Amino acid sequence: MKLKDKKVLVLGMGISGMGMVDLLERQGAKVMVGEIKDTAEMQVKAKELEGRGIKVHLGPHSLHLLDHQDLIVPSPGISLDILLLQRAKDKGISIMGELELASRFIKDTSLVAITGTNGKTTTTFLTGQILKRARGDVEVAGNIGTSLSGVAQKKSSIIVVEVSSFQLETIEKFHPFISCILNISPDHLDRHHSFTQYAHLKGRIFLNQNKEDFTILNKDDPLVYPLAKKSRARRVFVSQKNEPDLGVFLRKGRIIARFGREEEIVSLSRIRFPGSYNLENILSAVAISSLYRVSPEVMRDVLEKFKGLPHRAEAVGRVRGVRFINDSKATNEGAVKRCLEGVRGPVILIMGGRDKGANFSILGPLVKEKVKEIILIGEAKEKIEEELSSICPMVESDELPSAVRYAFNSAEPGDSVLLSPGCTSFDEFKSFEERGEVFKREVEKLREEYEKQN
Image 1 (tube, rainbow, N blue to C red):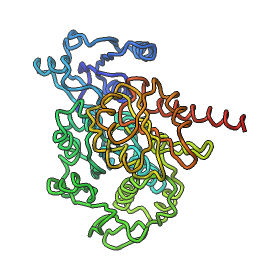
Image 2 (image 1 turned 135 degrees about the horizontal axis):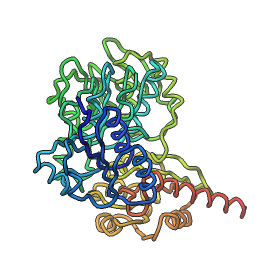
Image 3 (image 1 turned 60 degrees about the horizontal axis):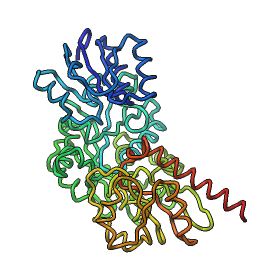
Image 4 (image 1 turned 180 degrees about the horizontal axis):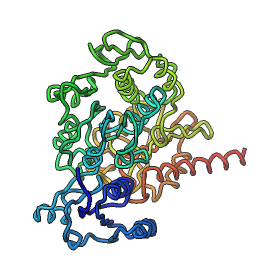
């Protein structure tokens, strides 16, 4: 793909946007950047880019940004329905997503692409850890701090990338050697037109694969398994319930890989990071690693030492016999369900934030079984209350710190206080990480106060 002297507009100055700017600049493109947020953070970034001779426009997207552009590359979080992009289509200006752009510059590198509603980041990171231990020259990209654009031209034998539905929306030639779909449940319905459309986008991950490639599918997921019929790649399955002819499965508490011959990888009793839902992540990471012929010994060593990622069913500690769990990354109802299923004992649940079109009523049976009380925060309070109030007592809180304190005062020894919002954080926080850190800081304050009193 030749970009020298092409005029390219990049929309967004997050991790993906900045990665695209660097990649385009190396290719000799004449880059302009549009960022709708005119904050102190963005002003600092704009000053740095302008120092490199790159024009930056902060604030609402003016249609003048389209003048004389050859290509527009929106960051994944930007909807294709915005007026600026609709006008660009009318003018015949090419629009290309970050995933597609970056993949055009990946040469002589084996590409692994992992998607799913929940567990993408954990699986991507874990797979990367195993492959790095075995091969060394492996890059990991996605929602972990580095975009695919940021690693596209590095000398590596394998790139493992986390892929979202937003990114899959704009692919054309994107072609991974191994694709993986972990699970599909409702998410991002505030952006995608329907759940059917969202599920369809997930299946686009193997759009350009052929019989020389592999696709790894979760056989236990009723929406993922049928996609096998649509893939032209060689199909590998992971399952906690069945033993596929080719793939990875559980047998009597042990992970078994079957690729021509059976190999025992590890006993579940040796794995330290929490959540039964993490099993599909582990099985998928093992399947990918097995296709690269990583030894069971290497996989076992990494799996036994891995403690999981922050803000994902993260055990924060205990105060007065009350357990605190930070699951701030749970931004949809499916993620809340998965976390609740793995928590033992009574739960006081903190939920809320900015709604993404969730159907919280699907949590009803599990809430009835496990949750003593729900504490509501954020913009989605009324919707959650409407859909679950008949099942469980609820109380509203103005902010997260006060919600943590109320939960602690209501809890008895043996209870768990769980932050699993089921919503994005953007009504109150800049990210789910910031929300999780606020939760953890408040728990630490409670611990210090309790220890002083006792």
